[in-house]
Image (cartoon, rainbow, N blue to C red; front, side, top):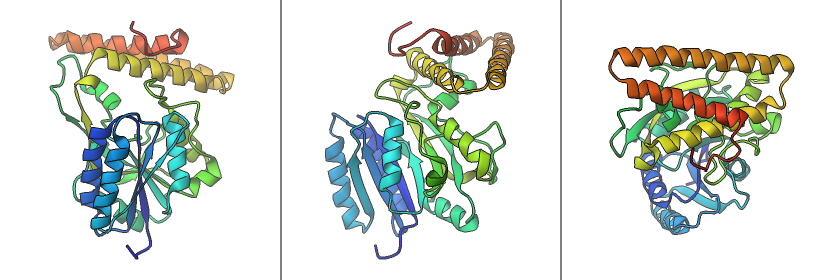
Length: 312
């Protein structure tokens, strides 16, 4: 491809070879004839991820697509993302999960956005959940964000101060990281340890000095979810990881910020109680119970739990 590359799509992966293969095939269909590169960062996978990457490299050459893969030896999603940033050959980097499916219009939608908003430094796209296995009856819409669901309507707009993009579909101008720093490697997933909040912490830094962060609904994709993520155990691990991440961030906060965080958590408990009553009135108590369990697991991660891989 002789045209200058405009966007690098980065997929960080760990032992998800079969999903990764499907994701890459979908992304390549959308990327054909566009000035983009696809970059996979393998974070020490022990499965057949290298085989998938080698096969994809061959297929990309046949389609005149720019594809590369590198291995990041430091374990953790934040390490992998930071490696992707340094390796990217384009001025814009867009992070995608390794278990996604995109429509043919996806790549063009991102290119069109940055052509229309050349001063934009960060943005996020819409994400819909695709259930590969039946959705449990106890899983309400309020838990879907844990599975990647991210939908703020059908118009391009800045996120408000309480909103931010999700990591499975987020974009940045590459030079932004020289101004504000990279992903915090103390946060984010490390192997099977589901700590979180590295994206939120980064976007909080962006908001301080770098203008609005845009929501881009046309750049939408589907996040695939199978039975392994449709269990209470998975939600528990997610929630405890979230609580642990909040704890890590609070260590660096002022007394006033800590008080605000505590007040926000109290407000969320009150909202959970109201939702529990709502679902009980609808004869869907299992959804209300699941929300209480989720909130309690966050509390355990925040105050007690040190290892979110153990069973409660």
